[in-house]
Image 1 (cartoon, chains in turn purple, cyan):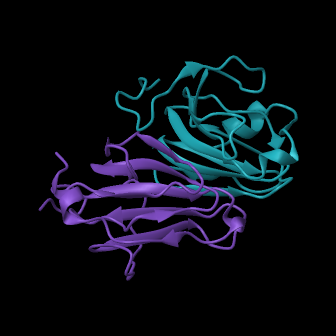
Image 2 (spheres, helix red, strand yellow):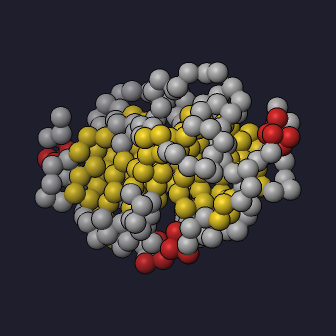
Length: 133
Length: 133
């Protein structure tokens, strides 16, 4: 397992205890919830990913550290590295998270958060995750 | 003058020819204009800053490379380094840009862009800029 990034671009913040992630994750609200444009920095330990979920208005991810994946339901997974950008459509079922051997951090910005919270679904199966390169 | 960053986090994109900047600036729309949430990566050459301006809905800046400044009218300038976050209030007159001796890049996300375009005002005077540390 790789070490915690020594110098992540944005501070990791606090560990985020949440049933929708398969392992340890850290959440730092760079712009607080309740603002017109909340902005989160999310850091996944190696092997950690979130469950399948959907956003009412979509979401933008900006990758800042490490290596990870983004996958939409029925599509191949996309490998992500620093500088990659993901535009997640509204109501698209998807997951994101770290590679097995790498920490992974991204900025996450929900689009039209006033449309309501994300809908959380089933965990990503080991079959799907273990098949990634 | 420092060199162009060898490995900026997000690609610099194209040089942006615009009268509202005092020098060379590069713009890369990570999420295109016209989207619900346009996201820009902006890179300033050393010494380059934009003119005083205001956003109808405010703006968020996420600093990714180099060293620069953010200043609101009537307030002291704030030095910015990678990992710093600026939440610019709606209708606040302000400028941002690079330090004299450093390239500077930030992500810029306009809040409620549907409220209308930014209002561009006078350039930042040399007196103000040259007084920065």
